Length: 415
Image 1: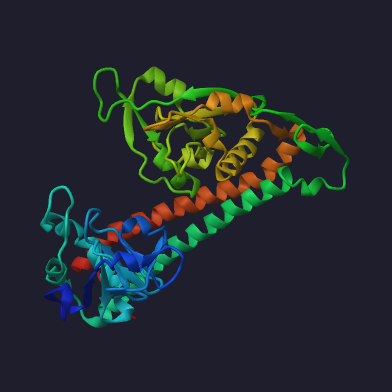
Image 2: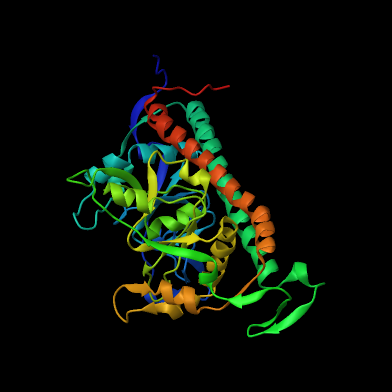
């Protein structure tokens, strides 16, 4: 294989590295005055950063189009600068010398990430210095080939990001339809309304609780990390941290566990189940995050799916109740209702799910309305999972090809 034009070099030959520097405290604010300030990867967001602070005295800047690179703690976390940011000392800005090669440079950093982690100093909080970044040994192809590789990686990344945006819109659409039907009663305004304990509701509807829709609550399991003793049945286990990823159509990093066979049979998730997080939370984030389980999601795993014992599974009395209950739970979570049903004054918060299902009063439409709603909205969640499957395939393709592209094992056509 010919590598004509490729050479051994360092990162500083193809990119400019700027290390962050924290501004003075008195120059920082949260009222939007000055330049948005990033201190670390917790503010990176999904596709672009979400700063919570601003500064009127920026020391170091990452300009639009730069790669934001975490150099302390969570070394290697990356995102794009979609505008100019002031960066604190936990971040570096990496600006490719040729704008058309920025996806190549980011791919190169991902390819060399393990090397950087190995040379990082500090055991508790790893640190990457400017010298380590600038002198990172890399293989550098000619500019035209860097541009071609960059374009290839960009096409995959942009398709994944587009699918993520579509899924976000689909989820918002489903929530909007739910609110229109069951909070504002917009499709039923021409019908007769009657007085109830929750105000005026369409005639034929009733005020009840979630227990009139939920047949059973099942606990989760955590099992063992590897097969041992009677813990031989392989499962995938949804944790509270995985719930937002599942809602977006992603499998996330749901771990493999090994549990008792009798528990596998009893606790395996089924189409229409709803997983709810009952332990965790914080003063600003309640418990009560939910995931809707459907056939497409289940088919993406080669073993049964269960949930951890920090969650519960809600089984529905009828399949057509699932989407209604799921979106109702999402609506109440956004309204911070679940804070009212948490116990424990210190440490980990726990959701009293049994009390919530029994006590919280809701307006319940007739089954024929719920069946119609299910037909309208279920297809949106199926599409979310389908696009999630596509992103999984694209991500696997990208991760498989990246080291081959960066090493020159696979070449991208220059035409």
